[in-house]
Amino acid sequence: MEGVHTVDVGMLVMPVIMEMMMLLGDSAGIDYETGLENPDRNKARPTRVRKLIRDFEKKLKTVDINMGSEEKEVEDTEVIKESGGLMARRS
Image (tube, rainbow, N blue to C red; front, side):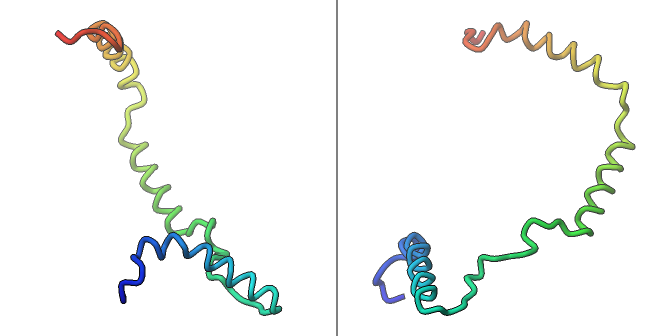
């Protein structure tokens, strides 16, 4: 705020300052919380999982399993024949 350093420099030195403060707290025997510990970090919320399952089931109902596999093979071979390779000249 007073122009001593910019915000980006502050963000770069923050881990060093945090490590120093943790070292001082450890050496003084002080219990502290860094705020980085999040016990729910890797847990999925049940409501989110249910929504993803519902969306996936809706997509499965709209997809025709037999359609597309034969057409895709034809399209892929046509593209390869037309392109002539990665380094081919453009016409």
